[in-house]
Length: 119
Image (cartoon, rainbow, N blue to C red; front, side, top):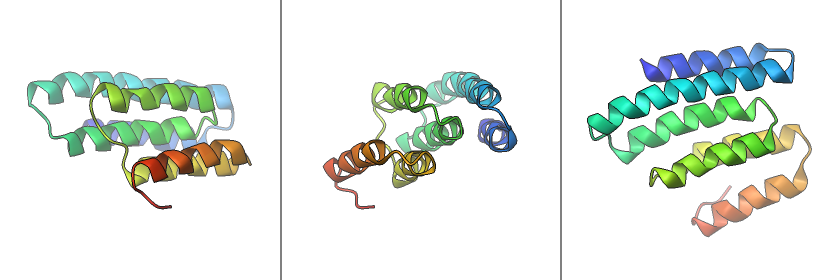
């Protein structure tokens, strides 16, 4: 259920015409994630489940083109002891590519390489 709600935020952010509206959808997705984390923590969720939820919310953040917001959100992975998946890195790369932010994309690629992942 939580994944579906987060996906709805993703699609809404994708069609929002203004960045403030996209940021609001990202914040809503984070609120849904907070509820989900309460439930999955009680259920002793597997790291893969947590990673999927986190990456769904990260994908909403990437629609905002808010590099700082996305970077701040990425700290949640480490705080929960979850590694970013190739999907998470792809979402970040897409965000930097849309914004023509070569240095930001290079940082993402560096982090990927440090984790043993290739683009």
